[in-house]
Amino acid sequence: MMTNIAGIKIPDSRLALEAQDILKEHGSELLWNHSNRVYLFGALQGKKAQKKYDEELLYVSALFHDLGLTKQFSSLDKRFEVDGANAARQFLAHHDIDDASIQLVWDSIALHTTIGVAEHKENEVALLYAGVGLDVMGDGYHDLTNEERNEIINAFPRNQFKQNILPAFFEGFKHKPETTFGNIKSDVCALFIPNYKAKNFCECVLHSPWSE
Image 1 (cartoon, rainbow, N blue to C red):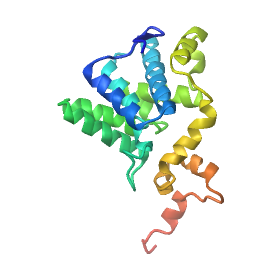
Image 2 (image 1 turned 45 degrees about the vertical axis):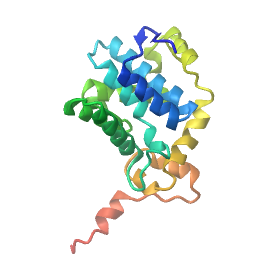
Image 3 (image 1 turned 120 degrees about the vertical axis):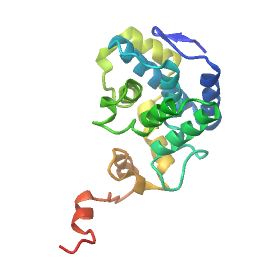
């Protein structure tokens, strides 16, 4: 695998390589290419904005950010983002990474779909969020040059990503659609589940057990 793409170095430490192995074993080609693009897009945006960040932690965050969609790491009752964050926490703790770094990676993964919050946190959290937003929804697309985008896509092809990622999301949490309450993945459930009715916050308030 190329180690320098669009001016961004892909970490090749033991930690990074073992994280790669986990994604290759339990993920898919779709998630492999997506996760690496997310790192490169996030890191490139960080470079352009002259933000300091830990390359290794950002890369591990990117590789683990969707592992909660896989059978190996999916829980019965937690958001897939939390499942991925918990998997990363266990992985990093096994490698004796310090608590602050583990928490940073956990937050990066757990918050990567949380619009309006992640972008205001630490650089690693914000850059993972930015990388995901660029690859999935095209946020910041025009901040990169055609050459930068093409170099990244040539290394990690999209391969009809638009058409394939939504079914992949749904496959990862179709057994627990209730975990999408209050977050953007509820839209995915609405797309794939006939007559889907999302839990409603206002109804939760108005039908709470309080007597008034």
